[in-house]
Image (tube, rainbow, N blue to C red; front, side, top):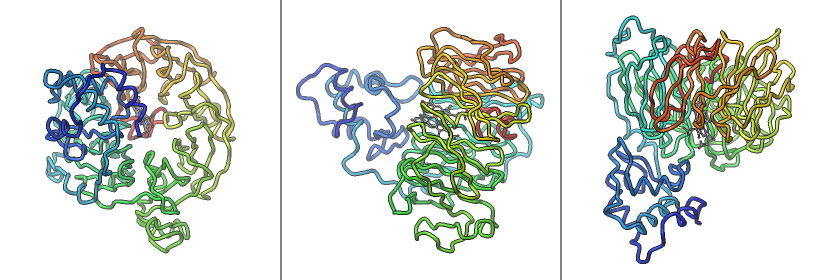
Length: 514
Ligand code: DHE
């Protein structure tokens, strides 16, 4: 079946007769880098799942012109336009034989760069750099990561990442290691003390994200291709266990995201195709804590397998795949793709409230804060120009705050009264709205670079400065005084997407994601 992408591709280059067989073109020109079955090798996978985020003309352009700062050469001189068009259309269609990725492939892919046991105990960079105020900045424009000194706003190092990192990099509890996931399945453990990668492993062909356990022992990766979860030893990324993700009827489901619920000593798993929520405890006493709730995913409901490192299933009344947790991780707010939202109690494994949210709340990008003794969470909305504030003591909507357009990311910090939201899903993508958490009013609109996407804010460890991405190639990282909203620095970067402050992440600041 032709996809939308395929259809659009057909209109982008002029038709010509006698185009070559695209499978043969792939064998001849692409296979040596992009691998057999288009599964990726030294270059990324070229499966529809890997390409779905690219604009159709980007695929054509890349084949024709190559990709700057990579080994991808342009084929414009070698291949006719018709051949390029055929090849791009073929890449957007699923392979005749579905690609297979087994546990053995994961194990064989592991690369260990350093012996974790031999790493120095302290940072090797200048002693005046605070390792807890480092930022890790993901630059999507040329697939690099910058490690930034959060006091001086100067880069400490910059290195090439795997292709298309996505989701928040996750930190070990002491903030020493950072773990990245790439869309095509690579997980990287990187040592911020010596500024070197420790190990890498490919856990699948298409990965959503990773979570690191609150005790620092485990990394859990969630995949959409194949439909698996892969548990890794956090110290060196050795594979420990692969879970086939199927619902209780045996139907496979893609993973939507994995989260660490540190206060519960468990991982929470959101599923894209099953009305279930999984919890995988890493507490060795879990069998005693969750008696009777253990569901063995392979053998059927109700079997007496230990709760430890096994999924415990909460049945849902619909597929819910965007989540936000209260601070105790006892309650989870969850939304379906059509914007239906509810609250689930993870202990009783039942729905305890409906949330009257419309549009498409982006719960995963929400924040929490306390005001006048009330606990609030606030979420942007991908389909409406508003931020919704939810009173978590009553599970009621406390306010809907109008913004210039649908936004993706909302961020704040304990030391600032303001929350910052973008409007990047709208024509006003260049405008940030600054909301007073006390009055629920927008107090300022800020356009740092007119006409460009101004989005994703992260604060310094002390909350004094807000770092904003200008998500363009080339783009910038702009540092703004969080009290008077004045620009204090700007660093050139290649489409910086997210940035992550070590201290805010490891202390689980309510103003940022975890
Ligand atoms: Fe993301 C985080 C899902 C598109 C940039 N994104 C996440 C997380 C999920 C998610 C589940 C949380 C992961 C975690 O905590 O580790 N993102 C999705 C989608 O389903 C969606 C809409 C479509 C898709 O193809 O996956 C999507 N995301 C995007 C983008 O288009 C963005 C803007 C650019 C990009 O790189 O693809 C984007 N997503 C991000 C960022 C985070 C993220 C920067 C981490 C935010 C943070 O501060 O923690």
